[in-house]
Length: 299
Image (cartoon, rainbow, N blue to C red):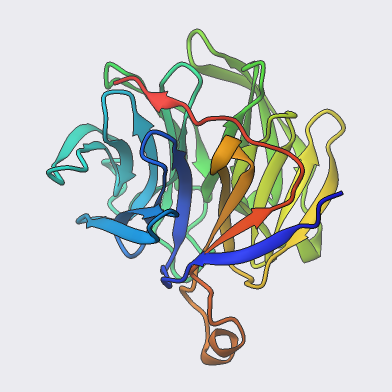
């Protein structure tokens, strides 16, 4: 059995690093700094970091079939052209809630972009409750609202047969499952799949591996946990050297590496001294499992 290796590969201290996605065509890791209001790309071959600053908090980013990216920023779905840095508005949500912003998002198997909202944080993981909703941006730029009364809309992914949507509302401390109609993009029958234990922290970003198991980054828990959706049991824990782990994805050659983002917002001086690489991005190798390529937004 290979031993697990954890390395801080991006040493920039992002305020809230999030939404990592591997772009195979460019050989780069794409991600956001939410409160830093940036979309970033890191090239592991050259170690070069590029970033584009935007004018609102950036909750999540997805690949776009036509090139560039789909971005959930502020309360707006946008297209971002990397070459000329042009941002094009596609749709707006939560216009009656000026204190809201988008958080995590991901593209579904049919090229739709899912992203959810939350109120602006009072301090890390402290928000006005029940202000968020989960939305889908369709390729024709229409928007579907799935449900509201969300605290912190977070991790999203789909089962390998596309019949189940996995979803996290962080302050529920659960990973949920919903029946998913991949043809219409509609959800139903929401239920709890896994409840985090006290020492595991707050469930944040999430991804799925090629065996259909879920990986959840645990904010304030300093770990990613692997969950079997069939049994609802945790089957593996990988601890990281920083507490504020925020999200994870597979990438690199054959999607055999896991990348984990982290945050440094809200850290006191003592914790910053103990965990100086908080806000960096970590690479985990030797997990013995691969990921699957990310979907691309079709609009």
